[in-house]
Image 1 (cartoon, rainbow, N blue to C red):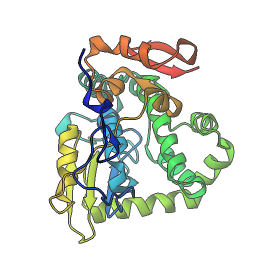
Image 2: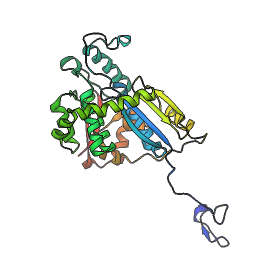
Image 3: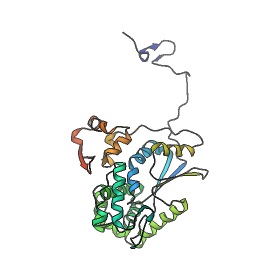
Image 4: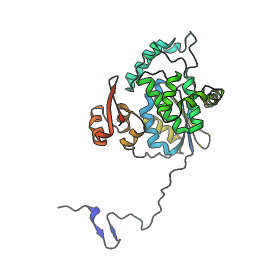
Length: 307
């Protein structure tokens, strides 16, 4: 029978287990000072921002203790003018968006239906953006970001026109706020004033596409990352802002903790916990009690909601 070293007690040091090299050492339990500002320039109807959700969620969960997080809305679509909106990508009208969105959804495995843009197209991303800004003003960043996440779920996975007044009211109600009151304020002059402040900030940051992530340190030096990238890419950008120090990742949160906040799609769970698709089912069953969640499916992708 072998005896673990951790069970051995040393009469001289008075330690059961492994003694350190020093009899007394200083340790620091303080969180690192957040000296970096991270600006996430985005839009409620940005499909590549939706595709980025799994990676960016993990980045924020594991490295968010190093930076102050700011969402900046950039105004992807003011209105359809009857002419080309993005001719370089073949986007001349709403119907062209449907196929593009579907491709993004299939590639990223963050489900996107897209037929809404044929049957009942979003005419502008400004209305839900104004709602976001009013929520942010009245209830803070966390609640505003909760609304943005839910609106994207409704738009991309569940084909709801998140720019329609009735849908905006319902979406705000769903996150526990007064939809009528907030949407009314968003439709007033204050809503656009707040949004214009974000547009000015996005321009100052030099953001011209979505998603754009900009990290700025105390010396006012920064890195700009455009498009949906891998986790390593964002960690590398963060390390450049930290005077050669390597950022240390926190342990991923428990799956039950994440499910308390949001609906979770299969790809988000796989990315968060480094799972292969074949490992997803057994992982979920080990982590969650059956009475606490429901498993559903949309567009061939599993997703999970708390009961």
